[in-house]
Image 1 (cartoon, each protein chain N blue to C red):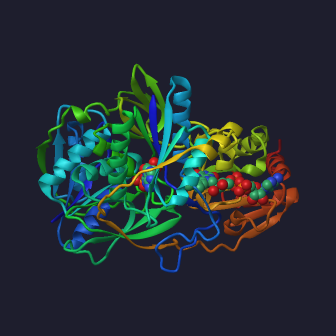
Image 2: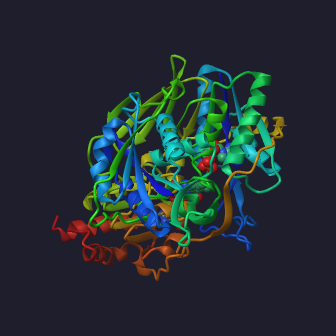
Image 3: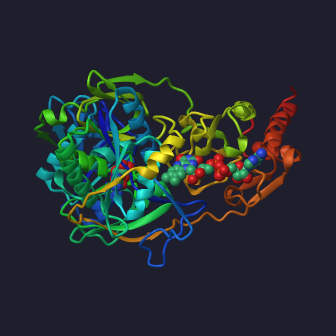
Length: 255
Length: 328
Ligand SMILES: Cc1cc2nc3c(=O)[nH]c(=O)nc-3n(C[C@H](O)[C@H](O)[C@H](O)COP(=O)(O)OP(=O)(O)OC[C@H]3O[C@@H](n4cnc5c(N)ncnc54)[C@H](O)[C@@H]3O)c2cc1C
Ligand SMILES: Nc1ncnc2c1ncn2[C@@H]1O[C@H](COP(=O)(O)O)[C@@H](O)[C@H]1O
């Protein structure tokens, strides 16, 4: 089977997120880059599915050319092909992103045949828009369910497990279908030696896409007000135990 | 000109998030000098109109179709899109939940209009004639974005728990309007096919005490003392992503941006550095106690209380002290 996974390159901030002086983006001067944990899990799920059913996993990203790094990382963990849609600006809005991805998927499918599954993360790590997958699926004319915490192939259909406050819900979609994957569906593997070699050699295809700007415009980014905390140090090491238990009693936690 | 609240319900039972959405929709409508209306999807939600009236809606649009029995993201999204086309609201507000984001995104895609998720504030000067400026959360709440929505119908979701639900005093029953929506096979397959109900009980999301471990714990087995402390405090165990990534604990225990958001009475963070993606899941806790060898760790400087030391020694000492005071 053929699976396409869409991933987005994002900065990997540590203790706090700094913003550039113009307020337009995260200051990445001292940061590494990664993809959303949901997307790492989508790649892992796709790799597990082809290990079981055979086929290819293609990873695709729309981003700066540096996003090749994230595509190579995905190949080092088992993806077999990679496609970059290069853009000059830092970020495209969700409508524009989905339009571009859908166009490229259609082109790739004309050349190589349909993807049985197109996987997305439930939401991207940085913009958390919850919509690029849904918009892309609609343009491709395929069903989509988000929030997948389980995904297997059963009688030619994608069986999706999703959690809710009430319990577990099961969905079944005839393929070709799209799915938004959530972290926790699996435990992503670390890159293997073989994967590392493959990631160095893989040819990254480039696809161009024209797409129109959508109606959601970033004005500025800002950090939420930080909680000022004058941390009370209760002590050092196990000798602090009585002070801790005093606190628990004071707070009414220890009854 | 109206503001339309999208009511989230599960087979006819309204979810708590809908109450905040109705309150926000009413407040925004008042500011615009207009009315707030609501939409329910599926006939099994018709009975919700009384609650909706109590929140001050003037009209409830009841979307009907024989297919609308259980939840289905595409059928719900298409129904919402049709109701929006028919009633031309200025703003549509959905719940900031898994279903809420999904239904609003589906509707927005079908209407080919923008959508802004997890809004926490709307422009105080918005009167319905200009683009709507919103403040929404990014990075799971670690960052705020000011954005403008330029569209004939502005679709948003309201971040959960940011608006305190408030009924409208002296409200009168809303007018009920039934809208028969047209649904075809293209949306028929993504309905819930089967479900397993959860057994009631305390979960990570609802427990008043959470004892959480990070990479500093070191192994799956080394969580035993944290389990013991949690059980002495009638709490549950949580963890950081470093822990789930190492396979030491299940992802259901993970606190943070891509894990669970919690707001316990006390969060005891052991061997966790407090990366922003972890912090965002724990920051709503009423009290935070950090146990860490590093006095400069982010979690230590942000927590209300801290103990500097090796968690492998500190945690068992707390349990021993509790048992000693209980006389056992
Ligand atoms: C998009 C995105 C989403 C993410 N989502 C999440 C999320 O939902 N939840 C999450 O947790 N992380 C998340 N992360 C990962 C996050 O960035 C951190 O990598 C992770 O939280 C680190 O876990 P940690 O604090 O356990 O480990 P570390 O950062 O390695 O910290 C270990 C801490 O333990 C202390 N320590 C070591 N030994 C001891 C000892 N014996 N006694 C006491 N203290 C000790 C150290 O001083 C240190 O402070 C996300 C990352 C990204 C990019
Ligand atoms: N620039 C991008 N390139 C590739 N995939 C993307 C991009 N942006 C978003 N996606 C995919 O769409 C999902 C949802 O994104 P969002 O709507 O931003 O939350 C992500 O988890 C990715 O799988």
